[in-house]
Amino acid sequence: MPVTGVYQAYLKKVERNGGSESDLIKVIGWLTGFDSKSLKKHVKDETTFKEFFKSAKLNSNARYITGSICGVKIEEIEDPLMKKIRYMDKLVDELAKGRPMEKILRAGEKG
Image (cartoon, rainbow, N blue to C red; front, side, top):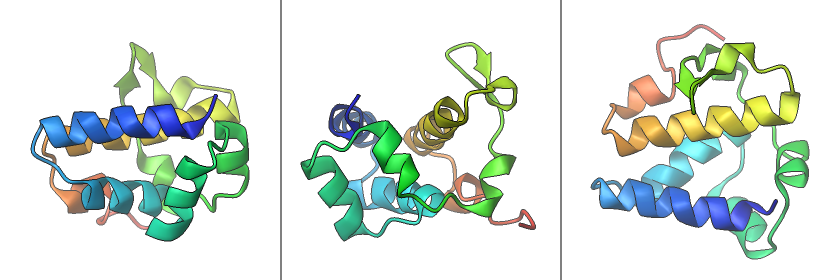
């Protein structure tokens, strides 16, 4: 599955709730290590999630992302790729709900 369609859905969700694309890029960049240019290249090139996360440098504080997505607790997901996708889903949900950026980025956690 390409990142492109999901990114567009994320963007619509964030914007519908008063957020911006720059906030979305910041959140995804925090998780993956991608800057705006490299993230937009992945979106443009229709990179698959497998390729996307293979080239990402996952933030060491990602392990502090907990909670449920679609009724499944993130900490119980065993498939590494699915866990990374759900980390991103959770961060975008928090952004769309207006959670403060420092909390979304797990700023108080010690990595």
